[in-house]
Length: 171
Length: 171
Image 1 (cartoon, rainbow over the protein chains, first blue to last red):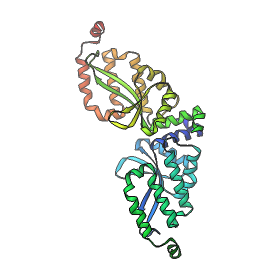
Image 2 (cartoon, rainbow over the protein chains, first blue to last red):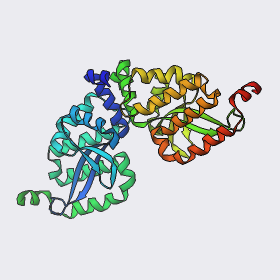
Image 3 (tube, rainbow over the protein chains, first blue to last red):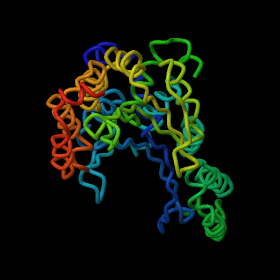
């Protein structure tokens, strides 16, 4: 451990290996009545570990200079390091994994990055662009399998909201 | 990936992170009628990955210069890189993790190493030493929880076999 911690670069590749194994880049599609188009996209980066291995999560927190560690709801022995603040995702998490490239989760990360950057550029304020983002999210590996059946329903609900122009004027 | 592969040292720390997450050092206690004391200790190092991530397992195989990759029995989408040859465990796996130290699995590795080395030194040919090894194996984190109830039974069965002297003469 001393050697690992003494060389920053080694530590970063160690963390890359852990993230490639136990990390998760996800974007939840959530219903929110007050949102412009009734739905929102909520990106989240997380790493899961048994509570005995909290030191690994603390290394991520220290190295990435953001995020928090919480008990996984309903699972007392499992801890989660998570970053859900979009600014931090853009400024800390994405640059880290652009420099230290994932092997197994590279594709998920790429979509994650594109969606976070699109949200930062406020593309979700435009109905057409928002629908494209929602489609992209559903194409992400894991989520696609679980939730594809919902996509049409969500796109319809977005479509049924007022035109983006109208809403932009009133919000 | 290019950068990762271009620097051997970086790759090793990446693999260390993967092993600390998805690696498993285990020692099975198996009944074997033909064995000196009816039971044997069977050490195994393995890394599990989804079949889409076979490249990670291939990196382990290439880097550690031993082991094989198989489909996990009963789980078509899961692959396992495994090393069960005791000589290779001693000469390839153990030296790697002595040089590149695990953070979360260090304790398991330590016991694993002690048991493999004891087997290489033929301590299992002596009844008293073999019983100590079996106890040590049951104290390993994961296995202790699952199988502690069996320990007394196994120790009794070992005890009931002929003295190690007698058996040594006939084997």
